[in-house]
Image 1: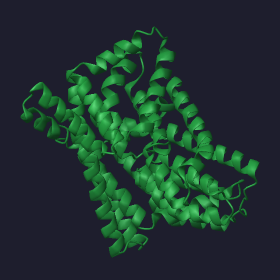
Image 2 (image 1 turned 45 degrees about the vertical axis):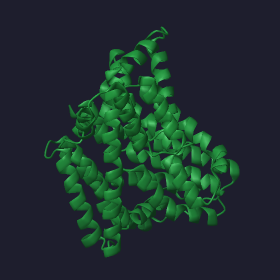
Image 3 (image 1 turned 60 degrees about the vertical axis):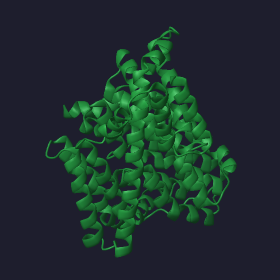
Image 4 (image 1 turned 30 degrees about the vertical axis):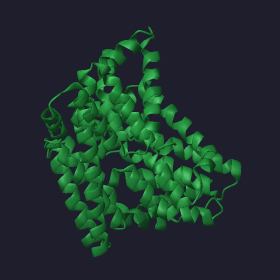
Amino acid sequence: MIWIMIISFFLMIAFSVPIAFAMGGAALLYVVVEGIPLSTMAQQFFSETQSFAFLAVPFFILAGNLMVHGGIARRIIDLANAMVRQLPGGLGCVSVVTSMGMAGVSGSSVADAASVGSILIPEMKQKGYHSSFAASINASSSVVGIIIPPSSTMIIIAWLTNLSVAQMFLAGIIPGVLIGLTYLVVTVLISMKRGYPSEPRPTLKELAGSIVRAFWALLLPLFLISVIVLGIATATEAAALSAVYAFVIALMVYRSLNWNGLIRALRESVYSTTVIMMIVCTASMFTWVLIREGIPQLISDLLLGFGLPAWGLLFVMVLIMLLFGMVMDLVPNLFILIPVFFPLAIGLGMDPIQFSIVMLSTLALGLFTPPVGTTLFISIHLAKVEIEETLKDLWPYLVAGLAVVLLVTYIPQLTMWIPGLIN
């Protein structure tokens, strides 16, 4: 009967049913057909939400929205502009570096794509950049928002796998920065080929002024990671402190958060938290059915049955995760893929922290790839360009991102070096 659930799930997805309702509806159909008491599903629906650690997610979302609507994005853009605008394709490079800076502030790729893209995409078009190129840079570079800590998605993974949030945050630093720098190189190479302009080199005074104006915003990720790693506060407590910090900085230091901005930040935080919680609740039902039917073990046995060496099996797993990331949202993918791939990866001798970052980085690439890439659709909307036009500009970033993911997969030191220093 498991096939009834799986087929109905994909049918609902094909008819544009929201992913949360598709997972929940398919699981309920299975329960009805199998004659399982509905009280069992009700218990599964709420069981995954009864966690103090999970409270960190809405607090991080709130902190990010307060920073975004408090005008922090403009200050980070000004700093990135002073750092890299003299490179070929200056504004494109500014977009990449800004996304790296915003990653440590908002922890959300979607928020980064919207806030940075709304400012830089019109400027890039005005300077003669192709609309498709501007959209591609914004869509691809914003994915580092969930890889460079702090990241609410990392908290969800740590919660699902019983791993340390602090270790996850530290492990994501090098891969996130490496993806960002790789995208910076790709942007420079494409800009040189197409003759996109560079901007005048900044003066030392201008650079220093940009650093001073962005200082309090850039201090947030350092503060968060420090209090968690040093054991001063739990991830949930640190998330709550970050929301207070963001509110105080935006309102009293920068004085850029007005009443309307506060209302928007609160409204978007409630909306985002509700969406995530609904997905978590229905995904827990869906995952319970998969585990009950032994699907994770079945897939694991199938992959092992090919007789591939460890490196080949890891490569196949990365490709499968990439495919899932292209066709489905990130959080549901975590619930589906973690029970399948985590035991398999650990059985191959891979550190669970390393594999967590590999999974996160791979699935993140799906955020800017069709057919359901969230940051891609935000960016093409801002650039007023059709999705088909962006494909030629997207593929270099996808290939470069996949290359970094494979490096992270096969070189454990890229994820485990910084956590090892703390231990």
